[in-house]
Length: 362
Image 1 (spheres, rainbow, N blue to C red):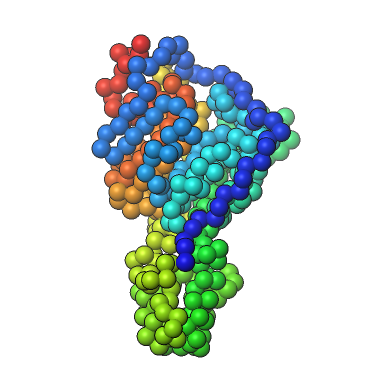
Image 2: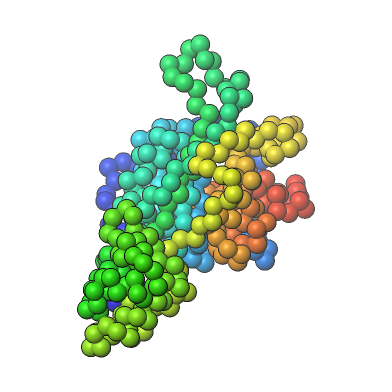
């Protein structure tokens, strides 16, 4: 048997290249070249350039935090609207799928319509939707941004951060289908699974359910199923629940077949959190915000901590000011990130090393 992520579909010939524009105009223009294109310490590696050129050199990710194009002219290279976002993202999504491991979680930040048009591309490349989390910036975000007397819609004060995991398959079977097939292969009646797990009926009702009520067996219960099948099942078909046909999976190996997640206490999928203001904002010496769409460090910390453990690898493909990477380092994770804009890269690196200053410019 073999374990695999779904094979990414062969990219179709694109009829046109995704629109790239200068956008709204940048607050920051250094008007010179940096004399460095990479920065790293013992836990973080930050690069200037296109992440497509760096993925192959990064360790496989436990978490990917995507905060790229929104289709709102937010930065040079962003698309002019949401229509071209699938073309913009697909090369990256294909690369993420190749690098992902069974337990990889993807957090996809975007506008509601931006996420909607990219979702089919994510599904095509083996990413399974889990949950849509909404960042509600509150009514205070309206002031100065929207003329409510002229717009023909309700003011938008939200962004989404959508959770995806890998659709892990064994021999082209989803895990729940493979589990049931392996038990049936042993020749044992389904109700014997309850004996194996020491429960009344939870094993057959949860672990072998083929619908939305399927429950991923905890590692200790998985090992009980394995041991029971190998002891009482058809001797000629042993071992059961094996990927290579030689040795059964252990509980620890089984636990790595799905993503990590621990829900922080008191949180729902609606994050009431005002937009960045004051000292939170990275600013120029004149006091202007450097980046239009800087993410709150606390929200980045929540998603990284919920879906990874210490020393796990975090990818931030579109670094901006490297908020996810900074959260990862604070939480004792390893982070890899890339930013294509030299100005954002420069100010982002300053968050990690305050000694990076104007003498770092050519």
